[in-house]
Length: 76
Image 1 (cartoon, rainbow, N blue to C red):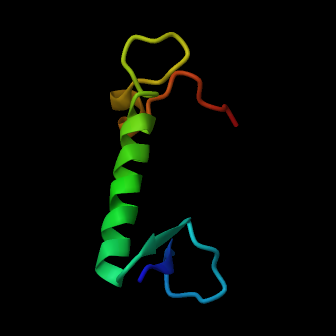
Image 2: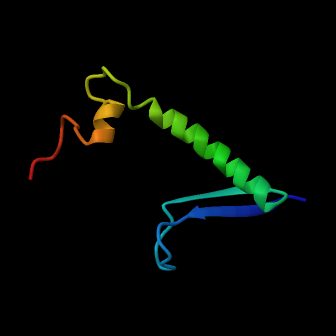
């Protein structure tokens, strides 16, 4: 019988902090729920990586983002 599981990712141990990512899935047990959420996040990550392509005019390349060398940095 499937149960509703909510998987929440939090940074730090503060109970007052909001999760940085939260997903609710139906699964028969906790390991299956975790595997389903991991698969969903992998798909989201693959889709998001398509936005960081080298050579596009207004999209930062992955190398620029990872090294903090974005062309359009806010100047303070």
